[in-house]
Length: 127
Image 1 (cartoon, rainbow, N blue to C red):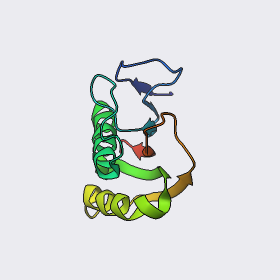
Image 2 (spheres, helix red, strand yellow; image 1 turned 135 degrees about the horizontal axis):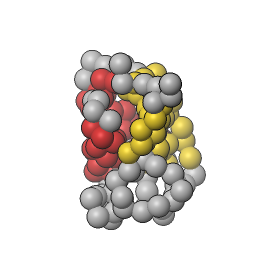
Image 3 (spheres, rainbow, N blue to C red; image 1 turned 90 degrees about the vertical axis):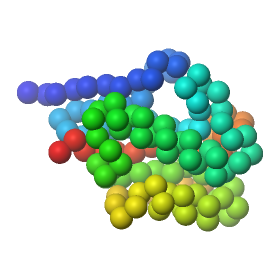
Image 4 (cartoon, helix red, strand yellow; image 1 turned 30 degrees about the horizontal axis):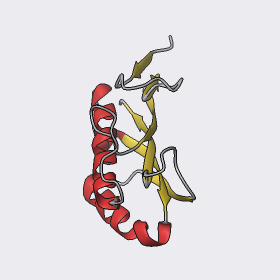
């Protein structure tokens, strides 16, 4: 039997859900630094954007009844890698504590919104 569950924050419809769980594996769409109303937080501030993006990731995880300790893989998409990688990695490690999922840091020229500096997608598990 296939067990499917989705999670959406209800802010907008781009044709995807924020999270999709099938048989214990959770696929989390790219999260970025928006607030509960959908406004970008931290324009020009990589640390503020990273913190808010991680909070939004937590929000999706909570929607499936799990926490960051259930993260198996994370992809961080980052503009201006040379300037932003050090503070992002520091905040990322602080966020994870002792947990160490697999992951990738991918430099990009731009993201969906002009002011967006970071986006994080992930795979987690429910068991």
